[in-house]
Amino acid sequence: MFGGRIAVLRLSHRKERDKRLTTHVMLTARAFGASEVIYTGDKDEKLEEKIREVVKHWGGNFKVSYEADYKRVLREWKNSGGVICHLTMYGINVDECIKEIPKDKNILVVVGSEKVPRDVFDFADFNIAVGHQPHSEVAALAIFLDRLFDGKELYLEFKNALIRIIPMKKGKKVIKVSGFQSKA
Amino acid sequence: MFGGRIAVLRLSHRKERDKRLTTHVMLTARAFGASEVIYTGDKDEKLEEKIREVVKHWGGNFKVSYEADYKRVLREWKNSGGVICHLTMYGINVDECIKEIPKDKNILVVVGSEKVPRDVFDFADFNIAVGHQPHSEVAALAIFLDRLFDGKELYLEFKNALIRIIPMKKGKKVIKVSGFQSKA
Image (cartoon, rainbow over all chains, first blue to last red; front, side, top):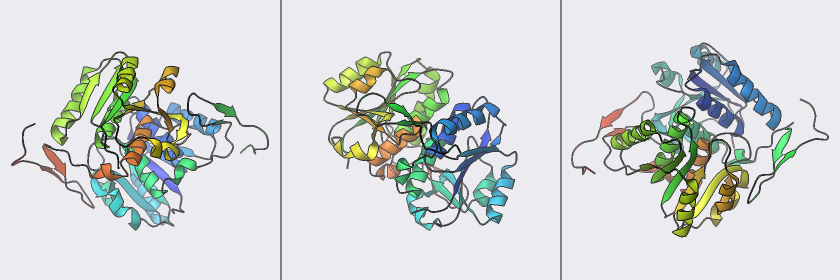
């Protein structure tokens, strides 16, 4: 079982074109057990605000931050002893390389939007393919984190949530959480 | 191992707002083993064309079609003996219900965009949650199909592909496929 910290680096966000996909990348990162997301490209306050609203309501400590220079993020991650996993359809199938990823180190998962600069492939310790067909960085991220956490990420509990879902065979049930939770 | 046919029903596509997300839903459906996608909402020729281009280059027989009335799709699927699985964060955790899904029937996987009409929950044989946190219909679809196919969907071969990726530790390698493939 993986024991490190996970951050996701979303490359080259374009404010108009990518706003919904980047939101989905970030929400998937949070829901599947990453503790933070860093994005490059266009700085986007509304996007950040939307993610922080989700965290406020649904709990946990997921962080979102902007960084202009992806190389700086990659270099600093390496220098601090972390591992870089770049998700790309051109890489090695996830099932072949997942066991080689150190389970005790912090992992930076890099997902692109359009064309990913060549040096990202070189910076990466692992270039990992979730299949070799064109699909979606959202799907790739979900499957990668699911493999990393052995499916246990679907049972994560998020502290300090204001609302929570009660699973139902039909219909929707959402409860407000109150009482003795701390205000973090 | 699942042996039926899988179709995905994407509800309420909005031409401008959803074009990229719906593309990702459709590509994920194809890459993860569905044989077709049906969508409702706005008819979108460009979207369909994009998917057909992918199929032409990357192979397989994945079909995309538009249907104005989601109820008709759901009713016809039921009447033909198929099973309807609606992916929703309000449903029962996927790992709890995946074993109950008949392995020999055709499955329609329903994914919404914004608010899903109440009767979709009622039509569905299974309302299935890929976790109970807000994230993405793309991620939910990928994980659901991955569970259904026991991860084997990442090794699917698509017939009549014009190009194919050669997995690499660094960099990109795409080859043109030629020779004795039939022209389907």
